[in-house]
Image (tube, rainbow, N blue to C red):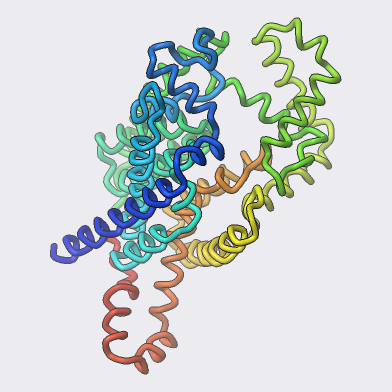
Length: 436
């Protein structure tokens, strides 16, 4: 009991520090930078929502272009004026929540010490500290994804009805923030049936949990699906999917990306499309235009397999490679390289070291794999991958803890001053079998 209390107090302190760092960094950059470097589309949607005009970009015509949770979050926290300070406060709290969840998952998977180390690494993670509070859905999406993962791990162990309902809601909210999590959610429904390593629950109970997750997820998504059916003529998780696949597999996709932003490449792609097909596009309805893009998107993917594979490799390198996408000034790029590269490698090492517990490990491989599949089909920038950073941090912390627990590390530790030994033993070296 004392150990759990100590862990909770330590984790709370880390969470407070995470909030303070993120809020201070966002406040220092100010409201002008917040809008200039962010996606103002979200703020426009939020202001119309807060004003009672509905989910619209122009104040009158409803849209189903993007799933709605982040604009709803901005509307709730920023109001009709998009108040910078209340949004910055809320997003800093959300990002701090991701840090805390990183520690909680690390503890649940491995040990309290590993959880503290993972949370400490997340606390100081440069990209999240700077970017989770940007005018983009990535910070909220990361928090909801980590919440979903934690609840799934708990469900796998306990198979409770309330936990299963919570899993479905959390996954649904994450999908309503960024629809690309859908493949992982579908895998998670099946994963809930896999028996735990020890003390497995009966198959009937696991099937019940999976069914509850499915129902809860469906009910969470249902209002948006009904809305999109009404607005766009068919239920969807955002009407931008077809244009995204189209732009991600066009001959001009790499005109700016990955050195520049994918948004710059998208502008070039659609300018070229208007130049070539503008007359035909002008007379199409929105439904016809969506189908037109969908047909050409899948044609681009299937008709030139060599280019599709080549593009997929380049996109995956952009996502997981050592450099930030899009590039920033030299100092920021250097910070990203020296932070992401070791965490990525340590995370892979930790995933390998934890391979014996494959039943839980496969959940995290699925999270990474679903992102990789979407990236290969569409594209990815560093911000799109940011929710995976926490997974690599958790398993990177485990790799560090495992290394410190080796016999060689113990011999090195024995030669250190006693105060240093006490700190390392107490805070970094886990009891690797303690998964309570």
